[in-house]
Image 1 (cartoon, rainbow, N blue to C red):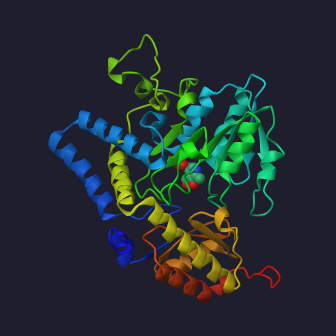
Image 2 (cartoon, rainbow, N blue to C red):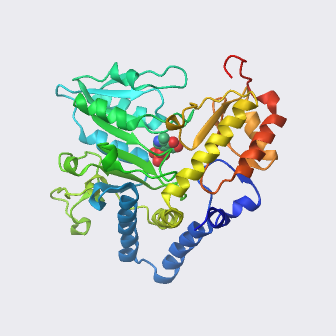
Length: 385
Ligand SMILES: Cc1ncc(COP(=O)(O)O)c(C=O)c1O
């Protein structure tokens, strides 16, 4: 599939310049059809649970392949938050290791789940950013022999900073701590090999660069760790055989499905499979090349126009999201919408993110609009440029 054929699967581009995949991936014809297929199956067959559960199993296997994992290392979850909670609930904090190291660039849910563990004995330590960078040294200063786990976002939802996860894994493992990757702001925008990266746990979800709907995500747990953990946040789908309907005892499957809880999100699984299918057809390397090209073009053009780009300039320190500082970002997002451009903001940072469906022409339209609305943008000092 070519980039042009890929873009043609997303009808929104006939009406809008869509640069908001960091919030929600664009809707493809394929995902639309998959969701309709789910509804048809419900209409026609009433309650085809066997087939529906089979779709979820198919999704588990397909997602595993897409990140270089084994099928039984994947739990299909209703959200990233649910995946984080499953692991947090399985850990104990009463031994020599009770510290959780949280970096300044985490998505709120990642901090909040671990803050909630303080009642269970966890102690939160912070790795502080300097401005919009979070060097490994900041982690090095706080990870020690008391550290149990280091949850870390790959790409920051607020400023687009990409953390050196391989470096963080080396650092944390050399001090005996686990690394829990939150890949939500990156998965689908390029290839990843979780075994090569060496992370212990990972969560992500389907609604952004995986091009599907909300209400479905994944938890990856490294094979040799799975059977060490028994979550206390659990449910009947976390059992060896949910359909044994036991209420007298609890058992634990040997795979990561032990971290699942209730009835799986079947409609969302249909959507997610269609999203993965599209990404397979174009290929993750092609997606990455296109995203990198557009990110380079947009960041360079924004800098040349004199705007303050908060996302790091080094290519290896950024993902698919570029953030430019506004003086009133909600007003800027509204102005862009009147020009047919869909973007988003966090605080006064304007978020523009790219997927393989975007083009150089999209970048040009956004830059022209920013120049036209430049009274809403912060200007870089000559020295900063
Ligand atoms: C980096 C990151 N982590 C986690 C989440 C939240 O995931 P969920 O709502 O599935 O728990 C988001 C959502 O935007 C995110 O950007």
